[in-house]
Image 1: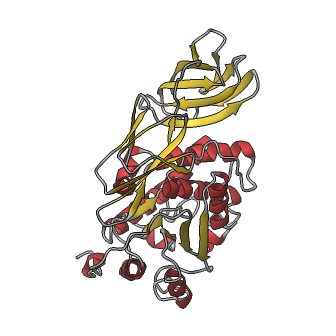
Image 2 (image 1 turned 60 degrees about the vertical axis):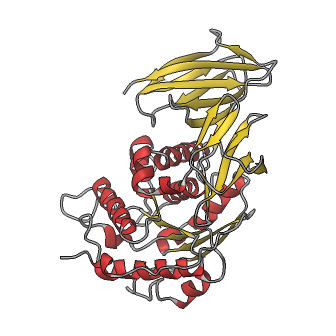
Length: 410
């Protein structure tokens, strides 16, 4: 039988209007109690504020709402949702549908659900073609939905069906929330992501959801942020690392279509180069605009760099943040024996050094995985969520750079 989603022809747009360069990112949440529980939009906003990002957030997250008409009128037909969609030129609209429509075999989404999502897509794009829609691929009931099912399998089917929906509508973006949950189950086994009903999220589940969505939208490494949203500091720190590693997983970047809207930055010496060819470029250092309209920028100071480009349709796209460290005159590179990693257990190490400063951990492709400030001579560093392989650890203060490679094995 023909896929019911493909039966509807999407609206075509003659004129393409760019969002324009704005200091404030506008994000609309359309969801239900899965988003409203512990207020995911507020947690998302808190992470953005912690990163120094200005964001305007609005929401319609009534309990029981889906995109299609179910127990109550769905977002595709609801007057409140329609009014909010046209109220702003949104940068992002986050769509959190009834996850129960996505728990079955991949490709078997109910036709009413698929058709309603097409309707909602067209409404959002009619208001502003440059608005990016972010579909949340979340979680199902703890234990799954079938006899012999389990939580991970159920989450994987939901993820697959959200990919299927996106591929058959408009190739927008899927945020891999459920995949972050699966990693958390193994990395933080004592942390319950479910509320007591085993369906809704706990505060920790909402925080991980917000961190994954934050990384998806802002393409900002959240590992060093301080905002916890009420979650314990150590748990929140690990969850931010999980969110970043999940979203930037090359496989997910491809299947969720995030890679379609993400230029990359390469670094050669102190010259930064943006991938691709675009009409406009804006470079940022630690969130503030710098540079000129060029695909290259010569860095003069260490920091977090990002580039925002304008594509052929007049829409803005940004890269992931790139942590760039410049070694300038007066900086001494030191690999002294005083910089030691003492293995404790299960890829947990004790870092011992008399040098205090910023510790950064990179994989062998140069991707920043974690960064934090070291203020004591002895620090515990947990690598349990990282794959086996070789990693580079650097420690920088005002006049010294210390670095060492470590090998992880599982």
